[in-house]
Image (cartoon, rainbow, N blue to C red; front, side, top):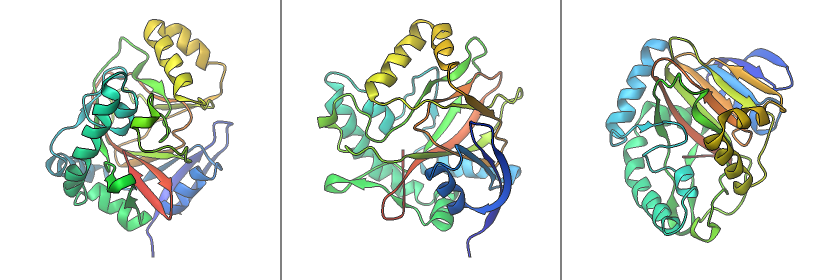
Length: 270
């Protein structure tokens, strides 16, 4: 029998519910559109540091360090943003490294948790291309801006050059992140009721945000939004196809996160 966890379920329209759920029930609620966000306490606060340490130890010790919309790790999202000659190079680097990194990540408490509670498997694509399991993320203090990471949306099919990116279909994609270290000013997680229809539409917003943050935020204000504050040990499951962002904080924030699609059971990738 799967374990049950205390869960808080949120709808951007205003509905909120508290229940005891299995991880699969929580994912199905978000995947099916009943709720936009489910927040679950899955691990004790004193234990998440161990999850982080094992993720660093077995994941080649290369956490992503986010500043604005930039990061230095090889992820599917970064590969999809590539332009010019990088459109060919980045996907190759991503898939060449993913299988090696995953050999370590398969042994982490983070992955074994999803394997046990969600029966998750790693997402593969053409020619046995294996996608990376997860990313370790660090968000540095950035009180000079409204967001530590530019508001954005995620779709597995987004790519500037689709011929270089092997994933073509636009699946119903869900995301989850485990909070390892929260900020002292408890900056939260915000999601808007806005789904960009294409990579191009998303890029237009990102370009607007980089040029004029105030104008970009004014654009988002026309949509309803929801902000929650995950604590250490909380797993935040949400509809990542809707625009979302990480508000600025005065101290370091640490999370471990992945994307999920339902394809012959749940598949994990990043």
